[in-house]
Amino acid sequence: MNVRKAVPAGTATLAYRDKSYDLPVLAGTEGPNAIDIRKLYGEADVFTYDPGFTSTASCESDITFIDGERGILLYRGYSIDDLAQHSCFLEVCYLLLYGNLPDKRQMAVFHRSITHHTMVHEQLASFFHGFRRDAHPMAIMCGVVGALSAFYHDSTDINDPKQREIASHRLIAKIPTIAAMAYKYSMGQPFVYPLNNLGYTENFLRMTFAVPAEEYKVNPVLAKAMDTIFILHADHEQNASTSTVRLAGSSGANPFACIAAGIACLWGPAHGGANEAALKMLEEIGTVDRIPEYIKRAKDPNDNFRLMGFGHRVYKNYDPRAKAMQAQAHAVFDELGIHDEPLLKVALELERIALQDEYFISKKLYPNIDFYSGITLRALGFPTSMFTALFALARTVGWIAQWQEMIEDPDQKIGRPRQLYTGQKRRAYVPMEDR
Ligand code: CMC
Image (cartoon, rainbow, N blue to C red):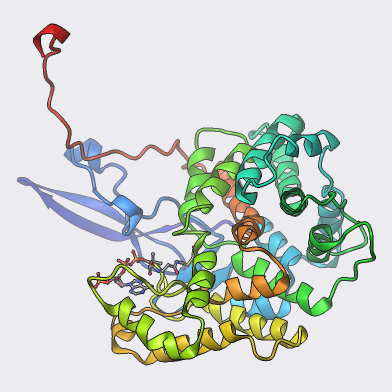
């Protein structure tokens, strides 16, 4: 793998109390430089304060680059538009894991390995029956993925590179099977086993939507849309769930436990749950004539309503994933002959109005990936409760690539943030009868 390391790029000087401190500045290959404060506390007895990590890089990484101002997203240097147009999800998995696009032989070997790990241990199926039928698929995913460490003991030694690779392949291969099983379980339908002559995404669609009573044929247009959705969600540098995976992994926890932690974090509405919220909002708006009322509410400082699917912590421009997602929404609706989908009309008109509105322009609020993903996934046949599970499926490769990178990083330490303590000063214990 082509590992580049940050290089020195001068110093920054911090004046604190009556002393000054020279702090090294590091440059990566793209993006802003970073002030290296690792020795600051030891030398100056002061912490930096940055809840939400808005100005803090937690690691060096070669995997994904985002330029939020220019709306650029690169996986290993390749733009998300190129990958969405020309690649497939499994090739993107290889790229994220190994750093370069595979040649034919490498792809064939990888494809074979993933295909031959798609089945889950038969005893895992009985594990599902412990869940209530109405359990949320993400609740099932957290539990079952965490439980993989109880089934695959031969790939939990994180110090063995071969075991790490096997665990990575197992996770990428089994997560569609587990997501499909979570769906089937909630529907009260029998599990459908993977079929080795199908591609990764086709297999997932079949395991999800096929029933034993009839033949299931994969629609190539819908499979392409699903595959593109997976590509668009595959990695997004140090977001909340990825940072969770790294933090969990920094203690030496096994990869299955770390990915389960990532799934738990992704579940929240501010992260993976936003596409469900965007769909709900479009349904609530319902018709184009009601859009101005909602735009007005979004702009009202006394109303906490927000346009879901708009705005992003990092993108201060059009989210590059949203463009590809919009194209897939059109492809899916055309293929299914849904020419008059009112929610698509509402979405397009809402986007048009917001992009011309001074409030959204001045705050740099643009559509994000979630704006179009909810309506597309619904058209593909998924219930809203599966949306975040699909995100988890796609993001598993990003999580595991980031986890591997962290384990191999010689600077890796257990993640241990400090705090600005604001509680009581030391005080004497008071016996109960004196309180
Ligand atoms: N609608 C209306 N106003 C907004 C919106 C919105 N969607 N998003 C931000 N603003 C306003 C906000 O009120 C604030 O205004 P002011 O400066 O007057 O107080 C300003 O823009 C900055 O907002 P912020 O909350 O400080 O920005 P942030 O970077 O912390 O939040 C965000 C980013 C994504 C949480 C936020 O834009 C939001 O809540 N969007 C809607 C939810 C959503 O679509 N989430 C999906 C994110 S993409 C998924 C992923 O990559 O994981």
